[in-house]
Structure formats: C-alpha cells, structure tokens
Image (tube, rainbow, N blue to C red; front, side, top):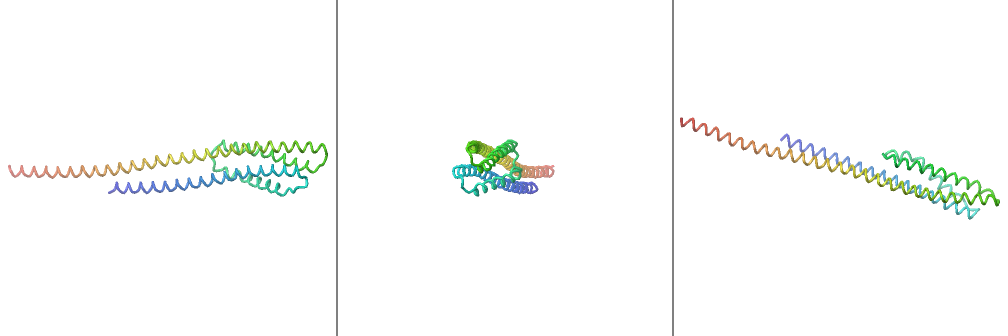
Length: 215
C-alpha cells in the first residue's frame, strides 16, 4: 500500500511538472512573438522613414508628419529594447541587436542631415542632399538585412530552447513511468513471493504436525 501511495505521489509531481513546463513554453512563445513583432515593426519603420525621405526629396513642399511619426515610433520601441532582450539568454542575439542600434544611429544621423540640408536651396546643397538620400537608401538596406538576420537568429534560439525543454520533459516523463512501473512490479512480485512463502510455510507446519502425530 505504501508503494502504491509513492506511485500516486510521483504521478502527482509529474503532473505538476508538466503543467509548469507547459506554462513556461506558453510564456516563452508569448515573449518570442512579442519580440518578433517588435523587430518586424522596427524594420517596417525604417522602410517607412526611407520612403518618406524619398517622397519629400521629390516633393519639397510635402509634409513631414508621417516621417516624424515613424521616427518617434522607432525610438520608442528602441527604448524598450533592454526589457525585451532581458529574457533572452543569447549573447549572439544581444550583440546583433547592439549592431543594429549602431547602424540605426548612423541611419538617423543621415535622416537628420537630410532635414537640415533640405531647408537650404542651392545647387551645391542639392548635390549634398542627393548624397544623403543615397546614404539613407544604402543604410536602410543594411538595416533590413540585419533585421532579417536577427529574426533568423531569434527563431533558431527559440526552437532550440523549446526543443531542449521538451527533451528534458520527455526524459523526465519516461523516467517517472519506468519508476512507477518498477515500484508497481516490485509490489506485485513481493505479494506473489509472500503468497508462495505463506503457502509453503503452511504446508511445512502441516507436514511437521503430521509427523509429530505419527511418531
């Protein structure tokens, strides 16, 4: 009976462990989706900024409201970068994120240069402005490439993390099942041997009693 109780306790503990693991995987999935959404949003903002720059470059009197809005949104997401990366235990991902920040600062400097030079109308300023626009275009391409690399790295990291926990969970589950079967089997064997022992013990005393009466 004691061993049956032990089996019950093991099953209960295993159920709790699986529930905790399931909750952990669910939270990891939410964190992963949130980070990927942010990365894709940042990539989208840089593209929007570039498009707005090109439009303003071709249309001098165009509004900069949409450009300013995209810049503000990008910077706001950038401020939450550390919070999003804290749960990520990967130096490669964090280093890649740092590289993107450096590239973004370079990109943002070009955008600011465009704003300043766009206010000046002259032949020379037009040449400089064209160069700045080209710099923005090229830097934006680099940013998109780096963002895509970061997405790939994070997807790989997430898959490896989840697979690692699933493997651990599977091993734990199998070990618990084997333990339960072993305990249950031992209990059955002990009961079987106890019955055999009881049977032979009974016959032994019966045999001794008969010999005693015969003598």
